[in-house]
Image (tube, rainbow, N blue to C red; front, side, top):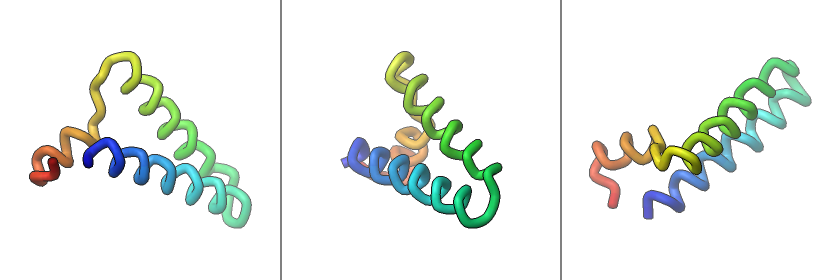
Length: 60
């Protein structure tokens, strides 16, 4: 369940930041880069901050 939530949140943040970069400011692309970086480091280190937050919230 946590993996699906992490993927949904990451995808939503990327799509939202892309829309905001088109209509508001290109600076929102930094959010896209941040999400991408976190996904990459998570794949390498097997540590995901959002998973830790979800664990503390009791999500299985």
